[in-house]
Length: 258
Length: 328
Image (tube, rainbow over all chains, first blue to last red; front, side, top):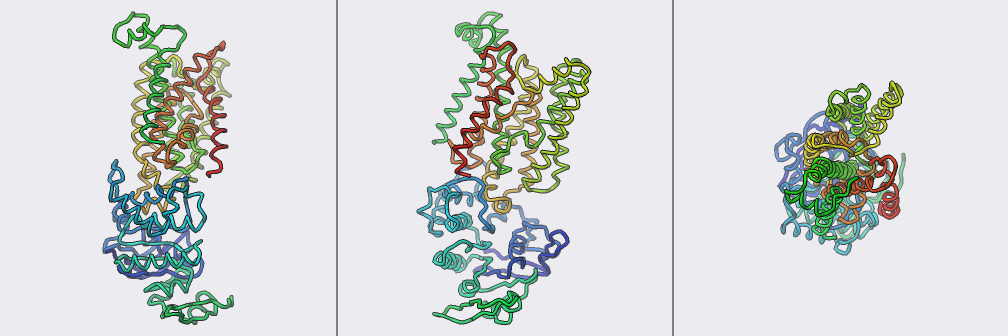
């Protein structure tokens, strides 16, 4: 169980404030979506939660301890992170790549043990990439690679998972599948934070949404309270149809008014 | 390929290269006399040739080759750039400049060990400059740019010394040294180079996992618990001490650090950590064999080792480039 708390969080790149005064208490067992237009500060927020960017103000606490003072290895065992994009610098096989997720658990000079192999197998099965196991990851399609990298993050088996755009490059079937997977992780007690662009998927699967706009947290709460027509007009500049189909909330942008 | 098989095969190759280096020279000793010396007996002439002349040369070939190989492998992994090699950080150029200064001012004539010591000092000066220029940034690009700046400065200094050298002989001496060689090295050289190389190897072999994690980029590696600042410190110190010590004794030897990782990578799972140890062994074998070739190829003046590795390196590298290109 991991709790992450952001207190008056601020991040500046050069002189430009990318994030300002963000307060959020992220509790375990929830699937939390981070949404907002391009450049709103979503990725910066999740990177700040992991202590990957220097803060210009405020702080982040993981289980009550300031993130900057936690040893990197201890933090790595508590929070798994799937970075944005598909950075892959060497042509490793899928299995070897997923195995990187076990690094935080390995003692110096020790080899991968049975427990690690089991965790790698579970991650590969959950991400539905068993058939890609022996392939070279750099030769896969964008969507396949996205699932392989998700499996890498799952292999850490940390009590918290932060995924930056886990649905990018996925087909609709796999988008739903990955959302269901994140949902199951949250139901099993994990804290799951996902940066999302698809508002319907965010509305239909998340317990809570954080809406960012110009680096500020403009709404925080259950999807039906965050995704209102007025707010979509203000933040995204879109007119949207909001409704419910088969018990799932859908948000469909219709027109953009600049 | 099975890792044990690979390491075993390379180990045998290193042994063979070492023995070849002991066996080959201007005087043919014959296996019986050599075996007698290695067995602790043998005549004085054979003993002197083998122990005082050829053994240091063989040891230096193995050590320098191992160091160049592993630093190439580590740097390619850390910078995530298949074209990286020990000289990209500029420390081998500043080490060479230190040696050139010793030659230029005639310090090398006062005491033969002043040259390698100044070269090592040059390596550390280069490291300090590199640290100042690249600052606290963790990006590989900053480090490469800083390395280019350091290296350019050192090369300019070397050119200046050639430009201003008082007579053609001094210039010739500098040029000859820069070409790289293991000729006429004694155990004094071994005692300077090998401790530096041992420290360098230890520092560079430490970070295999961090290099693997860097496959996912800086954020990915940090989120896997890697302290990139410490990794970088170990890497810079390892290259400066190890390559500095090696260059101090051998002069500049190019291409070994670049091609060795490419030679062994297809035989592994291609992760940066998997090529470290094989690169140590393959580097040792390759440089020692090149040093044997230098002695066998009949030329009027002995060929310089750096010249041979450059000629060896280009075709090997081109073949591997063609084969690998589709993978990147």
